[in-house]
Image 1 (tube, rainbow, N blue to C red):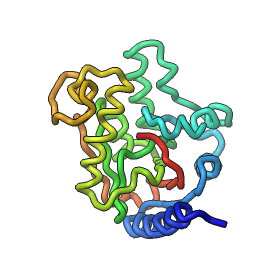
Image 2 (image 1 turned 120 degrees about the vertical axis):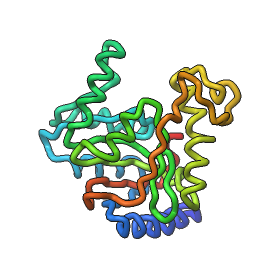
Image 3 (image 1 turned 135 degrees about the vertical axis):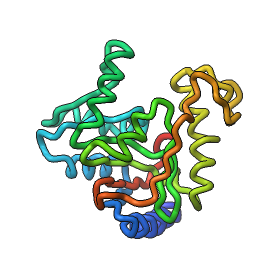
Image 4 (image 1 turned 135 degrees about the horizontal axis):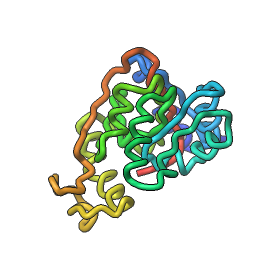
Length: 212
């Protein structure tokens, strides 16, 4: 028998999937991370070129390992020998068949909000790769776009700055200072309200807490 949280997640996901489809995203709901990995792999044909950014969600659920184990051409920035090679991988990632990522936040009416430091992730989301697959835990769903921007800057950004060991005010205090420091990771803010061309961005909602 489903728990109250599972029932709530199913209802929220149904509502969100409908709103994402109205905005021309392809959208799916998977109750578990295991199902989300299976769904993502089912969307990627063999021999496809695949890359990704710094998302913890796709790593934590085992999607990146599954891609490495599959029949794909993988561009993995985590294997770069130095910053120069990583930059080149970022550029190559813009020309892949599939780019994997999460999103910093998503509003209940289906708007994606992402804050980026280098810009490769938001660049890939907006243009470049033929397809984008987003893995998003329902913990990242908020009421509206304003709340999504707030979540991205005031919650996700300080944690990610700490993860990357950045020398920013938020990594020292845990709260956003709206800084312009050299290592700021809030340099690009992308609000994606409609998917064009239709279906290029595929959002897989997951009924588990994932990422930051």
